[in-house]
Amino acid sequence: MAIFVPTYNQVDAVNTCDLFFKHVFCLFGLPQDIVSDRGVTFTSKFTQAILNSLEVKQKLSTAFHPQTDGQTERVNSVLEQYLRCYVNYQQSNWSDYLPIAQFAYDNFKHSSTDTTPFYAVYGYHPRLSVVLPCSNKVHTPAELRITHLHKLHENMKFIIGQAQEKHQEFYNRKVVQGPKLNVGDKVWLSSRNLKSQRPTPKLDYKRLGPFKIIAKVGSRSYRLELPITMRIHPVFHVNLLKPYQVDKIPNRQPQPAPPVIVDDHQEYEVEDIIDSRIRRNQVQYLVHWKGYTTMDRTWEPSKNVTHCQDLLKKFHVKHPDRPRLPTSLNGARL
Image 1 (cartoon, one colour):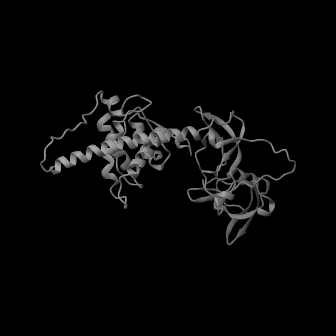
Image 2 (cartoon, helix red, strand yellow):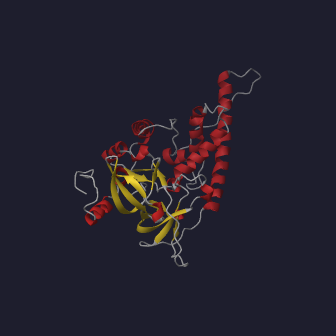
Image 3 (cartoon, helix red, strand yellow):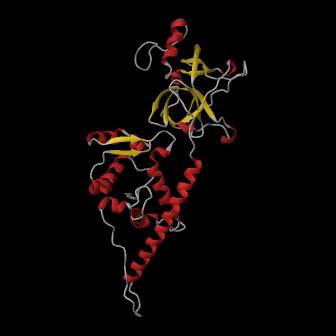
């Protein structure tokens, strides 16, 4: 059963929890689990603490694969389609149509259950028929309002049916079986959901990696061994992965790993620390970037390499006379 609640794009975790208690809990009580995407609203410590205290299990969707929460995505798609038919040019009255849209959706028979959500929850169908007395008198505002709502409900039922048929047809055309993968295999990761600084995505690298599969998650997702600089959730749906095959052309240089934009920051993977020096009273390190040549090495301030403590320690053990920070960020010597 769907519940449509108007809110804002920037709603935070606290307000989201308030909306849940006002519009869901008061009608149905606590659910056993909640399936959602990985937006900050649902992954925040506040939300997790609330759900843990209420013993509600949280199920987060796979990164860049909204089909994990497919039911919600389909409902959103249907809702958008018929709101599009009724909103004004300024799109300022969409919230006015949410109640009748919710009623129409919940009173529409679904193919998966062969009944309506309303009947599945309450065990009866809501009263719909409104018969106005036939007369030649001028209709009152109340009668006109009832007629308008009745026509609106019938139109929305028709739109819902069309939207569901189109969504099912489109999904059946697009869905394909992914490759057969095993733990330990190396795979390419599709880059279509990752931003880069290159001018056009049409000419950008289409895949990243190869990365090693370290675990299978569920029936269609895999956990990858990603570099620490890629601060993204490491579980991906099989449709985003492609088996890696060893290059049969000898001595051919692999494509350099492109930068990944995460949290609006450009991230590369450090392969080795080559040297260190003092510039303007600050320690700098000569960094060799993974997938790049010696010509691409750059001098970086120490704050840019805090994520590779193991490489820093290895470098200073091997070259104890080179400039170094007196302490690391956690107080231990490098």
